[in-house]
Length: 74
Image (cartoon, rainbow, N blue to C red; front, side):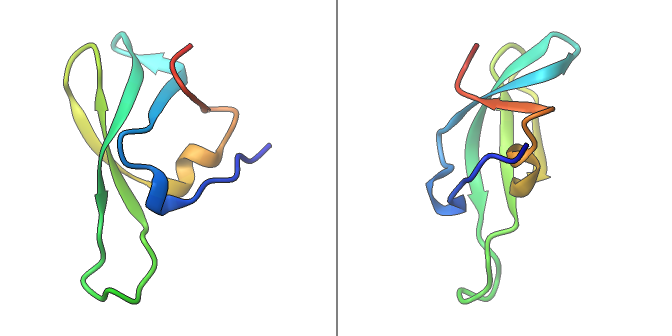
């Protein structure tokens, strides 16, 4: 199942990993990476783990996979 998302509204959204690793379950989108070409589509976001402050850059469409991510903190 896919979640419908608008990539321009992801900044500061909260996410729960359904298969957490290293006690990193809750995440916050801290940055939406803007492409060099302003007309190009957004492809990546930076997630930060609430527990460890570890951050990683992922394709934003990964968040639409309901088997791995749930919107909000649960």
